[in-house]
Image 1 (tube, rainbow, N blue to C red):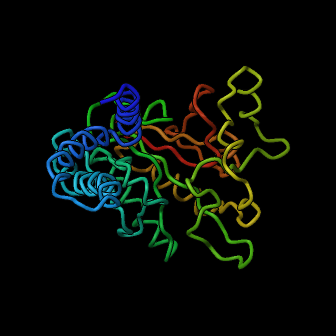
Image 2 (cartoon, one colour):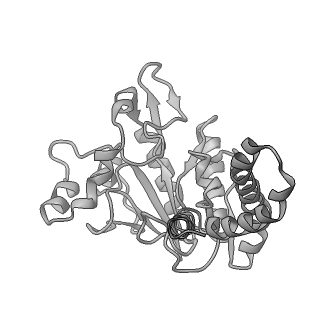
Length: 276
């Protein structure tokens, strides 16, 4: 194997591990399997395409068949990839990349809130964003600082479709982050305060996430307030992060609602919930 190939392999292993936790191991397994079967493949074009197919097949088997039962031994379970009683991922890639694992108590609290939301607002879907990887406390979930133990979960805000005036289950950001409901005149402007202290990363996502869809949606104050309120009433929930200006605007007074600190990123595009 040439040096360039070794370097590429190492980079691929590190990247896949950082993005999915299990992708690096799957890559090594797929390389081993490919060496076993490649001699049986005669057509040149198949020999170029097959390695990718082998990796993808093994990865999907690992992600959806092998990893979930093993993760239970680490005290984590996956949130459903498909809508389940009013709860669903905003983006299926959250599940494909193994970023949807939580502790049982957080899963139960989230499902309970989703059920309450569907009762109060029929047809509403609560969309979750990043949670944690399936294994090992302390294993980082880029780019988050704290999603490393299955006790933390981000959820999308709710929005109204400006064109129809109806409640929407869509989100202006395709990943759920980066399109913010910023401070109004007279409201506490924590993003500006943090940036003035040198915390450049605080609003960084706004500069890389396209903002075109923002004009199509209106922040749904009522449903978002209910979402945060229901989580604050869950016994196992210890902290909720949302920007101070939104907490005041929505009239939320629970002592569980905290400021996340300037070292994180702004939380006026999503809600962060964590359990004890």
